[in-house]
Image 1: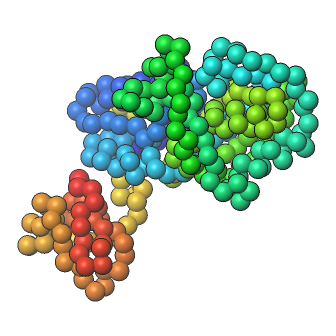
Image 2: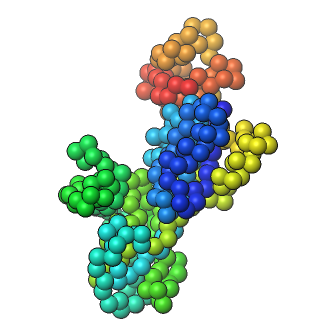
Length: 293
């Protein structure tokens, strides 16, 4: 049971909750890991790796992601989203033209890399402690600014009666949409907090094919869970090389393989017949193991 489940995380679950549920559904017989945290109140795509595919968690986590988020103007909260306590309010002069101009200014074409300060309520560790653990104690500490990329950002619709609008954001790994909402509010001049948040895409995983937990539970009951698991080699469609003899012994132990003249690609799936041994990368002289399965 190796591969990835494209899970739709619903409200009320942490990412770790989803991992625990999937682990229980698989009778705790395989490793299970997620590929990017979603807050409990957020919904959307949460790819879950099973078995040896957990070795590719970092590969999948590093993919760009797309979110649809609600930005509520005139309110600032302790958490940066609507679940927190309100710490400041301001009068809002709701001007759609200004909002669009400010939102668009965060795109890579206008700003380049975006310098973002992670929120206190986040899982980032500083000094060995997670920020949210400190935040729950009422502590606030300096957080190092990080560079992220907003590949694309646009306003989808306006809700003037709520002093709110919705944005669609395609961004790099490590981008905090709560911080983005706060920064947008700061530049508009009235502050802001994030309302609803949904991740609609994570790398190749799309919300339209994401499965709710009830659907996965039903598949387990019907003994067809394997049909829902996406093989890892289809997610990374590299060419395959079958090895035999001495090369098979080398590959099985994770040792480098000789690089043939016709092997001009950067990465290959190395296989023993139909069984994948691992992902190997070329250094122009040899094929070296990157991930062993």
